[in-house]
Amino acid sequence: MVLALLSVPAVAQTPANWTQASPETSPPVRSGHAMAYDSTHSQTVLFGGTGNGKIQQGLFPYLNDTWLWNGSNWTEATPQAVPTARTNHAMAYASGLNQLVMFGGAINGNVGLAKDTWVWNGSNWINQNVSLGPSVRYGHTMAYDSAHNQVVMFGGNGPFQPGCSYLGDTWIWNGSEWTQASPPPSPVQ
Image (cartoon, rainbow, N blue to C red; front, side, top):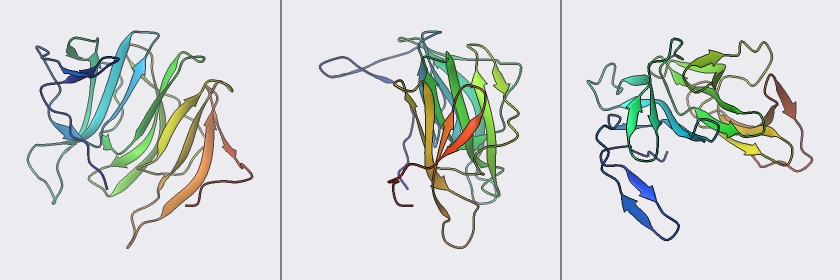
């Protein structure tokens, strides 16, 4: 597993190289978080991950905080609705749908997995309460397909068992519901 840590100071990329930024505020150090740029609201949204706090039951604490990057500084958001603390979830911004969508992840200290879908509206998380959709998972990937105006999600890991349960399924988010796709050639699980 590859872990990426977010820590102070932030680093910004310019067309030619990386430049270290020195924001006044920054999120606490973490790994397993998800981030996506929301072009409608001109902000990068960061949610959750695993923190660097007191270890409980052999695990670092799971986070459910939302941070916004405006290009020069981080601000902690205070949404009315907040998804369950999680790590190894996925987010993607669908510009044609004007939605930043988040799905799944590991919750409850690695004893559970989520299969919930949340949309960020610029200031609040909205649970989509989707009845049909992908199974519980963590470590999956999502990206926006602008040619078809949809978010594509692939793979990940299923329920915790001895060994891993690798998933090789593909799902499409159209802005209101998930549909399973069956592409003729598909990556191997």
